[in-house]
Amino acid sequence: MYPMQTNLSYQNKKEFRVFITHTHTTLIQLKKEGKQASFNELVLKIMPEIESYINSRLHTAIKKGHFSKGKYKAADFIDQLFIEIYDNIEEVEHEKDFYLWLYKKTNELLEDVIIEEEFDEIFFKNIDVYTKPEWDEMEEKYSTDGGGDLLMIEELDDMSYNHNDYKLNHVFIENKEQAMIDKIDNNISDEKIQSHIEMVLHNLPPALRTVFELFTNEHLELEEIAQIRNSSLREVQQLLDDAQKLLKVSLFNRYTVD
Image 1 (cartoon, rainbow, N blue to C red):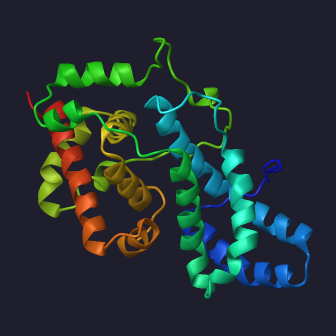
Image 2: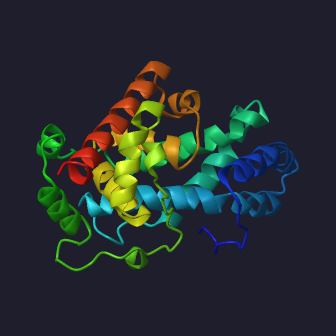
């Protein structure tokens, strides 16, 4: 079974990526020498951030009712990922590719269990006409579980949840949109912005949500996301554009329309 977490932490995704990249050659050598205990110890050091990503995906699936809390734990996927790394690490020819390979394997394991759930078609079709009171009501529902109780991150079995830090510049990326950014920013707090973006992403089609999160939270380039998803660069760019467009519309309608 996946052992207890290490106390390692990383200042940012770039630092984490560099660390993972540099472990590749050592892991190959340890496997050749038959030193599985040392191999596992090194793999364990690269797992905290991967575990956070897994928990983020599980959290979304739980809130959407795809399966119940407690049915799956991050450790279940990490255990399998240990095996995948040990059995298949030689297929990564260059150390620079190891980081993306890890995310690709993690996605494959998750999607074997989390079948891409049906999104809320009514929400999707009407996102551009919801009024502020309707948005407020949706957010209230989003923040509670099926029984009407507040859903807290602490209720997840694994505490290593990947906390997102969404900002307006993740959505509004053109200079001409600065006036809209200022108007929204003057009306609501950073916490409200983050909460709103999380709620809207929760209700978007899985492909849009995943691409936006990989680009924003995991700081991956579009070319890299295309590799992970086995998609074309054009498809990934369109998914990101669509996600940002829908988020813009929702923020505009909720916070700038008088």
